[in-house]
Image 1 (tube, rainbow over the protein chains, first blue to last red):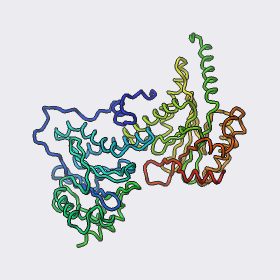
Image 2 (cartoon, each protein chain N blue to C red):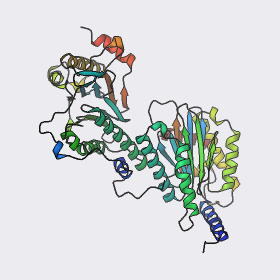
Image 3 (cartoon, helix red, strand yellow):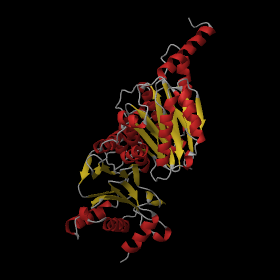
Image 4 (cartoon, one colour):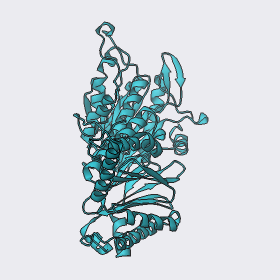
Length: 265
Length: 244
């Protein structure tokens, strides 16, 4: 072991540190392997929208391989730091790796620079990882299409960002959804926002949570790769809220109570 | 010049004297357990004594700020790489010290052509069962473990006196407020142990007026992964009014 080498990279950048330690982000592009028509594997439904007190991020729990259901307890909404969550659609191995790098990146920056990374810096960090991953995405091996939600401590407001596979980020003012079940619910979200009892951003937390659970249940009705809530087996969707106090995941008991009322017809 | 063993030993001995002389005015950093976790604190003319290293690890430093900073970054890098490559649960202070900075510090100190690190570090860790452990590491790589709290200071007489006092008090049963009051009391009383620093604050009032109180806690009962937090302004104001 030797003492820290002088970094020529950006101070506090964990990705630079990883690369200096020998880590390599997956293989570079192999033109022979590039698929002309590629589609991102997205057996999932994750969504996020603004509500009165912050943003809500939700996802189903099913993981599939082709037509097979492999797992019903998958966590697709991943905490990145105290104020940020990433909801993943796409290849899980790549998405989980990105989440792990981001977690360490934000914490390493905060501890080494003795200040939190700005909201814009966090958003850019995920863009950079997606850009690094382009070769895997176009080879059809590792495409990821995430949603990133954070509370910006400097601007004092929450924000939601949707990314394409090349790393472009789009700030979402109202709502977004991604994954194979998302086409079903995007229309409902838009309808609810424009013609529902109130715009989504003005709804209280309880109403936002109820809507999120119902949307995931609807997506599961039409998309076999999206798992339904099954309270009898203690399988609930993941629901998390981000406010100025940071993120909070709803626990199983809360979700059981909400499912009991919100899924009743 | 150093081909003879005696010359080398003499050079090492001179380095000890040199570093100890440079460290002499370093102000104490104390770390003690309390009923909900671990407290680390110290007074200094400017911030730069207490830091967060990883989820459950805090650092206190005395010495040259550039050397403290270099070792802080080394610890940060080691901890984060280990946490990424394996797990946060594999990041422990004992491993960071025993297999990380202690051998490197010793090697650096004994390579007499290189500038020695002018530092003394204190490290505190609260494990997942809320058991605290305290470590002290010297500029030459020598490190010690403590169960009931520890202290670092530039002056060894002061350091030994505070260490003895820490061991005589039941800090683990104290609330945070009480622990803060007691460490402040020890800080003031330690001033009587040294003569050299008459120009520095001698009372808590002077310390609060002229210097900065840096403090942080590792809290056992929080749901977040990272359990380190700096003392709040309110906690420091409350302390000021109770000891002032």
